[in-house]
Length: 200
Image 1 (spheres, rainbow, N blue to C red):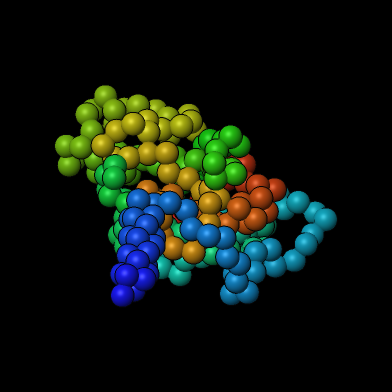
Image 2 (tube, one colour):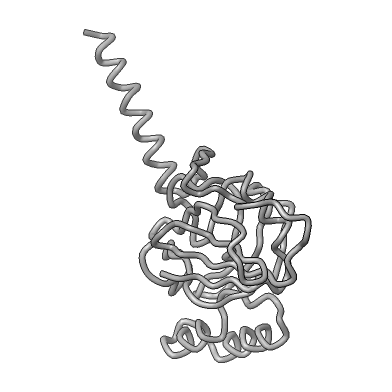
């Protein structure tokens, strides 16, 4: 009887820890599946034009080189995956047209490719809704015009990007996560200015 209670207690603790990990956004275990093959073929020629298209509902990142699909990768989204990002802490991944504006290779998630979220469209919405000031709006617009990093510390949120850490479940604060192996593949293609389009 005492062992039954102990076993039940252990099971409950494990369930609680896993639920807490999912809720708090801890990265999942790394799993790879044949439905998301990564690079479709190796090529000796580096494509001139790289583009990324992310389909949130399909959990899919498509890597294009010179207009052709060259890779398909599974993604994790923000912990509240449905809908467009509106504010800091909402757990949503933004939708729209962005570019990579920042690269960090000193991150727990192997590489981080920061997107220029919030962009001008997001800033216009934020100003209209009273989430940001006109000064913050102007700073975001100026950064967009110069191709720089937008103001990331506003109620709109920021520091959204593509990084490693795993793609088994939706665990990020709004970023797009892939497996560590996949981010190492993507690093060969992604650079400052790479366009990234995110669809619902």
